[in-house]
Image (tube, rainbow, N blue to C red; front, top):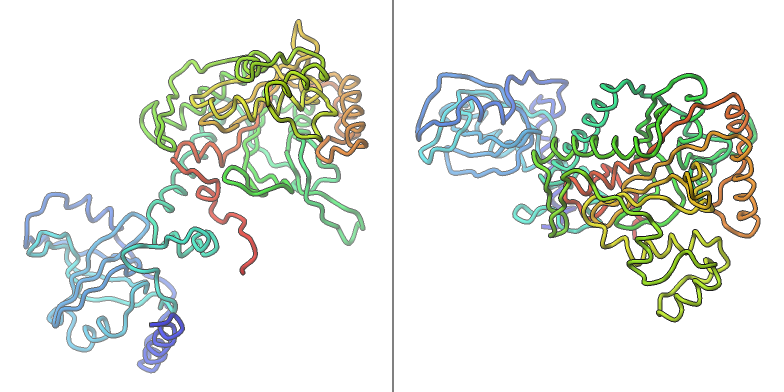
Length: 492
């Protein structure tokens, strides 16, 4: 039957219910047990058992079998499923007829009765009464195969969550990861804060922003690409340990690892450096792994990821040299010549420099896919790290690391630059890159520089991509699997 005909049939049932004086959308239902609680209370009953215990359960009808004077329904709630055993004897003629003729798959009902087991030993509620709580006017996806069309799953996310237990489980595990992160940071004296999403200057990262317009102020504002500069201003104000979990927005492409709207954790700790940030990342992510899986090893995309500490640390230049066979210490023209001889392609827009962009390209294309177990890649060129302190003993590098897991960048962290004069010079260099056509280069933020001139303590800062971290911990191979409502293209 076509979907339009199915909807029409359900609407006809809706009209009949209302004609009988039945409200198909009542206000509330007093539930005493979830499906999981019923199963936990009676784990080992034999066939045809009677408990004498009455429960009230509620959920969505996911299966319905009518067999003359008895019927069986599978009720699904947030914890799992429980069977309803429905009989004409228990309900009476009118109520039984209403159940078998008035209800459809997808309807939400409340039911009550004694907990029993059937002849086959299936734990059930011997239904002595029920109430319709919400009439589903659209049919569920095809019963046996669930919702398999990927685009349809993301476009109709509620339908996906009804049909696919894995989708629900991923969102539950995401919430567990966030609770674990908050507990870890709260226990260590970090203060959770909120900083502006609408910003006059998009700063704290190299990315293209979304722009909007404030009508009353008659000025353009930007959806934040990162909260970093505001969080560091809180360090200036004396809040020595702060963190924020929130949305960032970058006007860039969509892929299995990128969504224009995404969630990050950023945390800043005064009187610390990037070594301390590595220790924090190791311990906090380990807590998340243990919370989700109970052990240190997970499978991702068919391969094992081992989170056992300590995690590998490797200098960026050393890694790029090893994986590309080229010498990244060479001047840019010589490096480009060497890469051409080796057949390693470099996009034209990167060939004009700075050299750090070419090194970053080599990291992404030659080394990153092989970084499977957690790996800290450390000490990045200064020309691509405008907010990080220079590396002690190597002023052309910075004390910056990126954390890679399962071939994905998960975190980015610095020993934070707190010299206001050097920070201004770094911003000016970025403005030069913008003038040369780099739309992702950072801009001068005078408010941030003014606060930096008040004095910011030495500090470590780290940003962690929550969505990608959850991907690894849940085995999801697309970022859209771990976001409740990912961005999808226009309906075609």
